Length: 443
Image (cartoon, rainbow, N blue to C red):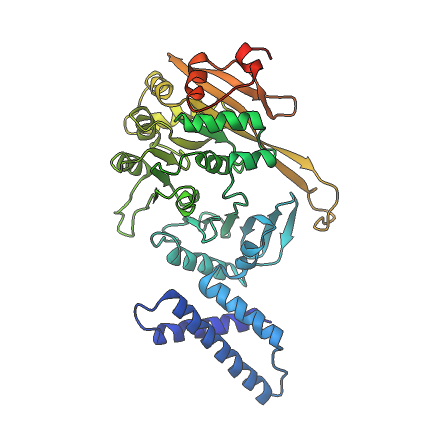
């Protein structure tokens, strides 16, 4: 199979499809027509090969060509096979031929090229941007950034023009529908902490999940949301769709997902995260969940949490649970309101009840089948909760908090400061029964 033949048939099928498909044709019918046109083109290719005295493609090679054509028309071209591989966790491309794949077992390996050229890779991403998502997103020299949720829930990030070659990164979520109990089985936290967090969600405590990039914040946020009673109305707000709570109809039958929108070619039509947070207050939501706090949406989010939307949640990038408060202050200073640090801290103290921090640890692995001499040693990434802080008050430039779970010898969260009586009383109302050591303050 040659890339040239795939490109030729893909182009021919695309042109024929544009001419033959009637307006308003159902997507399934369009794909069926494309498949028919593909096999027709393969039959014509076989006739030309025989007429020229060449060996035609074998049935297996024809199936490979048909699969590749379909991947380019409806999927992500050469990336699609990696996205479909359940063992793949992350895909990082620098140009069409420098491709690194991280696997679920912790190994990392160089992969084959995913396109015939950088231009072809850009075109694949551009086509996906136009076809997927709530609205068409641009990806060109004038708008060189793209964030996109793929049909399987994976997140695609791409940049061009600002780098020498196009960069495409895909993060797959292997634990997209996990509960806190299931995260205990995955050793992300222990059962005592899971019971505490479950009760905190049911007691409608506002929770902020912090951690570094790729630490597992979104996975933990989904698991926390799994503890929300199904009768409650949830509104999720994201820069690019990733949480997918609206797809979990058994757990969240009344869930509205909203996504920020960039400006169009004329520079108008932008819908910011901050605007969506304000809009959510008029949507009769029981809880508002912000996928990731990135900037000036922090103030409307904190206001929402302190004005009747208790039980709301969000994630934020931070190096530690204590660093979260500095990050919130820096975002508030960048907002149009430009709140002072003191005012921001008062708002934080009145809005956030708990900060849950997720950390990672890299563990070297023994040689594996994917190991290659001269390349970095394979490692396993372990993700786990390291700290939980209970916000108690604010005093000037400080947010006061108790680290009720702190990092243990191996970095995993262990019981720390006693939980305040007020919080224990609220959790007891939803059935929380802390260990006797917690009640007595014996650590």
